[in-house]
Image (spheres, rainbow, N blue to C red):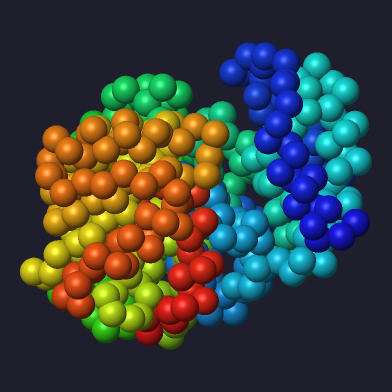
Length: 439
């Protein structure tokens, strides 16, 4: 199987009808698929990371810290921005095209055998997790850090038996699937907690925190709150990333540079460090591992800054909380500078509040449409943005929208492309060919 054939097979899993599966049985199909593969997850130490925002960043930082501490680490994150191989990494490197093709060749027959069962063919997301686990088992990693998808309780990754569960900040998103209260959403996320195993929780809104406390107590899982286990000081933007002082109950790590920009990354970094301390206990977590891991952790599309005039920011923010984090980062890194916004979203997320948050930071918005079958029509999204901003243009073609933004932006402006991973992924390759990442 060639690499292109492997990608075509994976993408083909997005199409087609499947039998209706009761919620309580959704994990059965995933378990059956792994059984067909010989249960590659068996004996694999796993960290599951759930939450609404910061999952990918926290997972990436945790994996980088563990690698700097001498562990061989597998990392699974989602979604990818430009290249499917971003999802599966070993020791910081994406799986090679040849390896991915070999993995799909191994997994595809098990997928087809499973397709004949009562639950139908495994999904794109289930197969992606299976590919990652197959890769990690073959690579003999010491630990696998696995980002959970939507929710937690019913996500494909929740068939795993984590040695540690991590829950990043919880806010409202996917309310049609998870519930419309923070309590309900938090209890879905808490589905990754395991009896007697530790769980690390980032600072949470009171309603979500109360739910996690109750769920942890019910499962006898020791709950470690990052707000009680770590102290952040002197958080500020820096030329090479975000700078923050970090002290935990176990050590003082001094001033650190976080390669992922934005003040919200300080919380993600603290969460990753506390999780790493627990994983490596009773050994002490080396300061150099934390400093090196946080500095070198990278993730496409997370306040990704490209050099040039005007500067250009790529960010996959798509819900209210992530838009607030993006707006704060724009204020921190570009105080007083106007923003020309390229904005497009898909209909699986609320558009009203995110549009209000980011439109208030722009002097002009160009509304476009991501390449997705559920893309919000540009005119519909523009109507929401016009509630908060007068200068709005509609250009459904994504590349034309970016070209227009770069043409109208002055040297003192900032161009920001956001709203959907599909939008950022579509335009990122061409922009990187013309502009290097800021260092």
